[in-house]
View 1: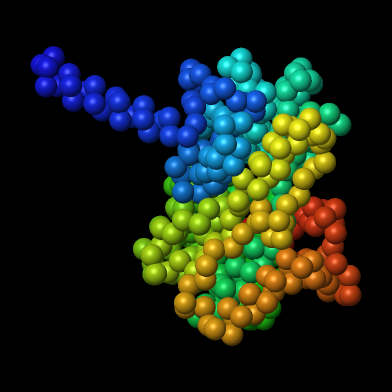
View 2 (view 1 turned 60 degrees about the horizontal axis):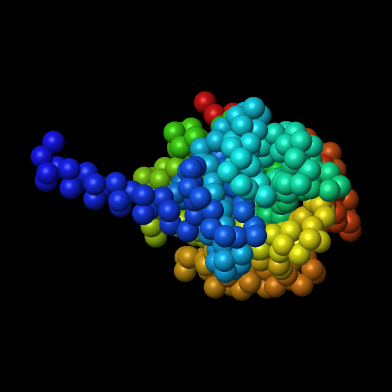
Length: 367
């Protein structure tokens, strides 16, 4: 190899490792001298423009918040296979982590097993309901609030009265979002329909894009999604359709990006890690809201009419004040059965008992 080629290769390697070490540590790196040594397990890539990037940037923000008291490592692209997740957790523990934060629903079983085997390690799991009384907790939030507001925005710009929704799985978490989005849309335009395509995966850019294209071909002129990448945005952009983002406020649709419902996970990370640092941590099944900042909505496109923008702002303010419950009856499932009776509102347990889509929604599997 010539000296010129050798120097070019060396420079490329230096740049690569400089990027990898941007605010965090990966496998094999040593921790800084920090009391909190956190290991994050991510299902996707830290630059996916969606869910994992949101979680990763939350970790970076949390490290900045603790100013030297916290350092972290991470593993990305970890599949929802219990043994593989467990092995990933074990490797992070072996490298010195005293907190493990697993950022996907399907990581729960592995975290439960590890929490029993390592009682001195704290395990925090995104979504689901598994926890114990000592060192294993789950965390989530009232994303139905942001979904409702984005539904209002979507209904204000549709001309076909058909809103498309690319969805991962027919699972309660996903159906909560679909139904909240629909209720928000119906509050602005009672004639709107929401068409859902279930793609059978949390994150697969090709399937997400195909699902969006299917909905666009069925007449949708606004696309929303519950999946991990921005592939649905790209599909909508190609057809000059509107887009509602998800998980992370990333615009890949240009002028057709309306807004996004997204997480600010550092709100929870800072809260829980401070308790671990103080020695006061106790599992509580944390459920954040728009009021505490875990749940957020991006700025609105100017295409959303001024009166609807005001209605969205007023509704958001009521949510933050605890004066507006998305799931207030009467609400009916699409088969006509009652989800919530007139004059009543669902509490957290009631919301998490949702098991289908409401009237105004039609759902199918990807073709």
